[in-house]
Image 1 (tube, rainbow, N blue to C red):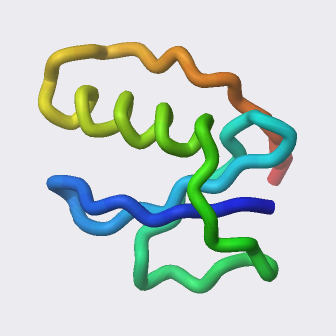
Image 2: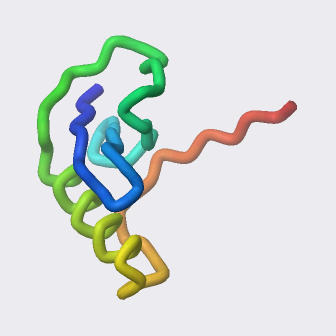
Length: 73
């Protein structure tokens, strides 16, 4: 599963994807849940661009495909 780290105003954030959908966001100091392939893909690059614009207050919604999992407690 690809992951790539980006510098943001809140610190370095890793964005992970699977099959062209965003799966996780990780802060740089967090342990990764599994072995990931560090490489930038087009969807990760677009997610990072949208995150940067979101953090600057210019947008409120994201338009990247997500792979959502719901965990019941």
